[in-house]
Length: 366
Image (tube, rainbow, N blue to C red):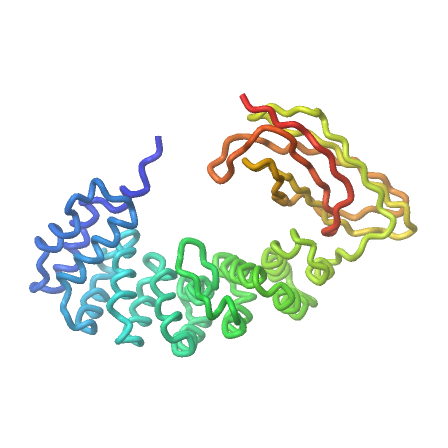
């Protein structure tokens, strides 16, 4: 059985934190910090533990934030000695976000220094929300930093809809201020950074689909393979939704004379198995057709209605007069993100965003 996530923050880790901070300041009360940070920790979940450790930092670090920031900075790892790293830095990041707003430049510099040792993408959002122009002016300068973790913080920390983090409503409404940051990182040498750029653009596409489609169109001409992959990943939500401009950016235009036939293997599918299906596509035109093939499973909900979920399949070219037969199995088994209900489900084939064929099957629960 997997170790509970909350145990990433445990008394031994807190004791190590106390040691790393205490060696840099004889006035730091290690015993008090440890007592406050670990009180009843065994009954707390991960974020509760982190916030309690953050409270303990606030109670024991110097009242002057600049002094506290200097102490934390001295406690980060160096080439010659270990220091605060990994999950120890989650409560440190929270502490900076809580106490550092009145010392904006010091806080951003500290988060920048922290990010090679953990993530600062959650803490930095408080500063973006508080003073977006000021924060983005500083963060925008990080796109050329030699450390790839810092460059990634510039793209990941500014994502409008970063999962598990506070949203940035001003950037959700108007994402234009972060586009220069994302543009500067399009060809970053690290895939780690490029994937973050793609995820940020995909966030933006959920609220401003045309903006992202135009951004991709602007940067895809003569794009190298890595940039093209980034732009394709940036467009994944738009492609699933059949956005015409996004499809056209990757050569998937309106289809002409494509016949589609869907055959579902069995009218009944037992939960825990999968639905088998065969798709036959025929190009009846005199020109080749570029086809992006997805499929949607319309899952039955508790109230009997159907809700679609789109799944990627494959992209291919169909020659004039060619007939292709494709087979696939879609698993229907227990997952944490979906509750299944028995009854009629629908399978729908999407080609270049257009529904060309569909069929029903019955899901039978044990």
